[in-house]
Amino acid sequence: MTEPTNSPDTETAAPTSGAQKAPAPWVKTALEMGPIIAFFVGYLLLRDQSFTLGGEAYSGFIVMTALFIPILCASTYALWKLTGKLSAMQVMTLVLVVVFGGLTIWLNDERFFKMKPTMIYLLFGGALAVGLLRGQSYMRAVMGETLPLTHEGWMAITKRTMLFFFGLAVANEVIWRTMSTDAWVQFKTFGLPVAMFAFFMAQAGLLSRHASDAGDESKG
Image (cartoon, rainbow, N blue to C red; front, side, top):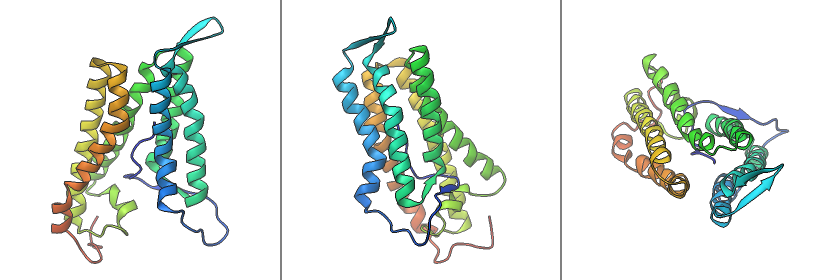
């Protein structure tokens, strides 16, 4: 499944010939959320079924994982062509979906796919931690133009986001290891996006206190 697209790292740009028109917001949202919704709906339809291929039985979860990989690849490619760029989180999400989804199918073990969000959040939480140790905010590299903050503001929001990512990694591990697959799918489809939205809404006070017309260009 795809993950949140706000990335604490750089973006991958697509080659363009001249100015590229930005797609309508609903198109971008559909491409980002479409694979997640498709997985959820498909899982609900297939979760009680078993499919035999090559003499081995595969659950509906495994089958939907196999279908999800090309769906995500197609939507990510379309997003890249339409917007001309991909965030580091989008690229890493695609890579980890292919790797962990492939292991899930190959070994017929759904645990690998459930581990994927944990790896994503640990990687990006770790990246933010490295930046903080160096006195820098890697979030600023991709959000500085759209969200001007003082140096102190960027360091504060980066620290909070790092802790939030680590918290999501722990939550994912607890849920998939202790709860049913149904509970994990619902958490992944609805719980994580709601948590992300609530987290960034809760940062309104910090953003207001540290707002800057041009940011603090003299530091970090």
